[in-house]
Image (cartoon, rainbow, N blue to C red):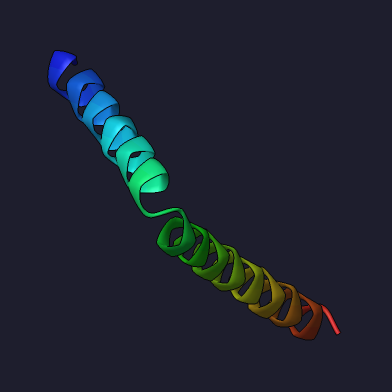
Length: 53
């Protein structure tokens, strides 16, 4: 359990470091993640609507 907690703290620290040292790249990464999640949700909605129609 301690290893998992340590890994989470290291990930958060790395993300914060990246965000403060390269804010434009961090914004691009977040936008890419958002676009991917948005596209995935759209595909899921389309699948469910076709499944029940």
